[in-house]
Length: 456
Image 1 (cartoon, one colour):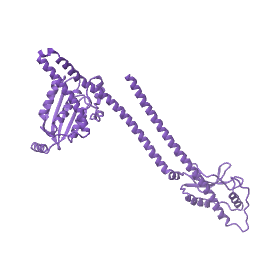
Image 2: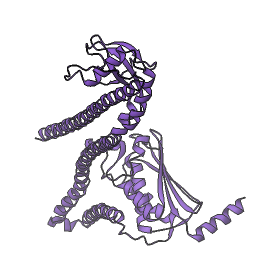
Image 3: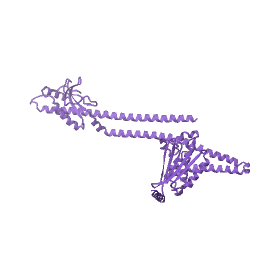
Image 4: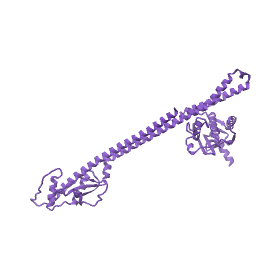
């Protein structure tokens, strides 16, 4: 059943990725079609403008040629159709009279007209044979084989369709950009937004998968961590209900001790959850006081020596004897670090835990160092996150390491509430070291400076 659920979830995410990809392709295709159609529309408009420029250029150039005609000269027309216009006969007759087209004048007139049409581009005006597309004359030398040339329709200047005038725009990209600039910018912004939304959607899906996995791991850890003390309490309760227990006071006392111990353990777990919730919502107030470190650390040491199944060796090096902190939460934070040192210790050998304290740079520091399995740089980035337990999360399902993944998050939140922080360093297979930083009181800072002065 569980396997089927996982398969359904996997297929669901696969379909989401597929539909996301298809949606992106559809959006990009629509955008590409929109831009292409706009490009073709602008290109056709430019080509139409070029045709008008050619006709007006020939009209203006023809007027200049006609000014020098002898009096009484006549220009004979002919049959007009879609391709042969009256201007064609005028140009042809003028050429027959020895008044040939001047390519220099044509180029100058076309240049002025193109500016009127807001077309700023290199261009060439040429005479050509429409029947075989051969070039007869050009107004100037340009590379006519460049990609992207826009050509006007050939305008016939001979009625037998053997010669025509054509305008060629060379590399008219500036014109396209000016006319499509806003569209390109809008398309780019839209593309960025679409890609951004898809990336955000992917992040949300990944986050949801992560949350689901964390929830599953948390549920497993919570059940595992609560089942043991509850089983112990139930077993002791059954034993205490037995009438024979009254005749065995020492055993009764032992069972009551177990019930109390396991109840305290459960209460601590619940309080830890509540504390983290309050810290996240800024509803927890730290009651700071002078906390003597040695008695607090001795209590923690005795607690772990009594309950640990592994040999423990504690080393205390306390240069700072007191810190300004909330006693209850600080003790719980250090307890969590020692608990992690024991949990994530090596399978064989003695667990060595070194706790040092000092006051430096306006901060009281407590360092907890162990000789455990350590953690990688990748794990270091997430060990302070809620429900994260680094590399231990891989072994938690095998029952090797139990816990909620709240301990280090609790430590981080408590230090944050104190106005301090916590740092971590480690070498895999060698050691882990956590340093708690808390703002020192003025008195602590002054005492520390005096000690430093004496040492110097």
